[in-house]
Image (cartoon, rainbow, N blue to C red; front, top):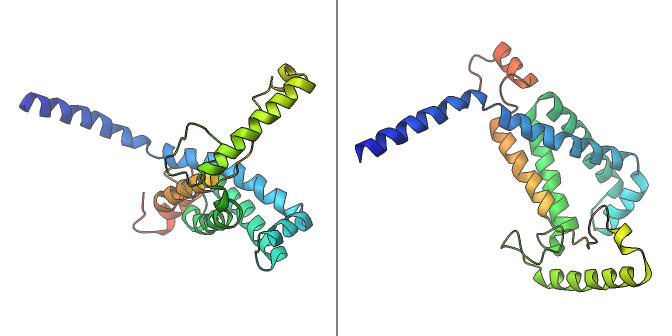
Length: 204
């Protein structure tokens, strides 16, 4: 037993040495999320009228104002993620934006973005919608095979139906939540160097 414990401790010590690279986790999250939010913000701000109409159809109050708030939050938040600047602070409005998106635009569609017959998440609450989407998907495929060049149409990927559940909003929220607690990470973010310069005790 002592040999097993000793070996396990040595393996754990070796693993712990990799903590020197722990800044790579927050960096990867930032790089992944930043372009998503920047492009989403730019899209909203360059299509104010159409996005405001959509927000209004979702029942959001002051839809035009909400477009500006959401668009600027995503655009500026994404830029801050790239720079590693005020990461923990910008994570808060970005998480709120994801909550609003999930509740207003996606919740009624359940969890999955696509109607997966083999659920990747057991907490899907709109399996009825998955079943209906699968029926329609098969109908679309049948029509395309009969009246179109199905092989060419599916060369870039299979035909599917957008279920549009909260999956992406929830995933981005969880990633932002991790950044809220970790911050930008060491070395490759402005926050790290500001903290080293201006804070006696810095959280890195």
